[in-house]
Length: 312
Image (cartoon, rainbow, N blue to C red):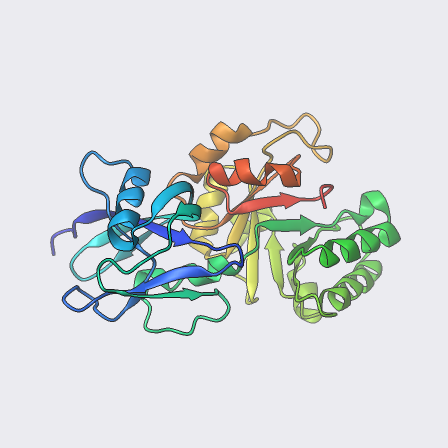
């Protein structure tokens, strides 16, 4: 069989302030008519991805692109071709989307999609869209348990929805008690997803929402742990590739800036960070010396969001 042609495609995730995103239904006469998808289309010769995105949004929806940030890049094989889908998140545009190609439009949320069927290449994207833009990490070893729990309560009240418990030096009995307390806080009307760093057995015992693999675990495991959510710590191209092969849900990439926990360690900086993320298929949280004000610049360089320990 000859190799399938590679088609470069750009895809827009139009996101409104309430978090809902736009799906369109492919009209009659097109391949996969009746399937729902994110708007977008082929990158024409001589176009950059952003230029193609701007053109497609105008042609399909009659809107003018203000700003788009790179997100994920995924390969998908159809019977007739392999497509490389370059997903961009779009939060600013001019005009109200209208169906210029007589297609149906609908605004949906990742945790409650009410239309079907979705175009096969777009289905895995919904799980990534569930992930919030801020990933908080505990540091009770520095602040003390009571201060840590207080900051976690405040973070939950302020809207944090994803937390990693990372307490590598805490004694096992104390750690289990601490984890149980955090889980109780998270499930007390906050609907927070809680992952445990490294300790797969404890995460399964206490029924945490998932596990965050250390880079050592990432390189040694042969299969993804059987948990709902699985993240992984990455620092270089080899670890990023392994995370992709293992099928984790997302990764952290660090350190972007110098950190207190790893003094003297070389940092990536935004230029190297963005190079490592080029054509990467998984959501990536930038980590290392970041504050909430760094979210926009992280997303401009391809990150899904930012992870913070002391910034929580």
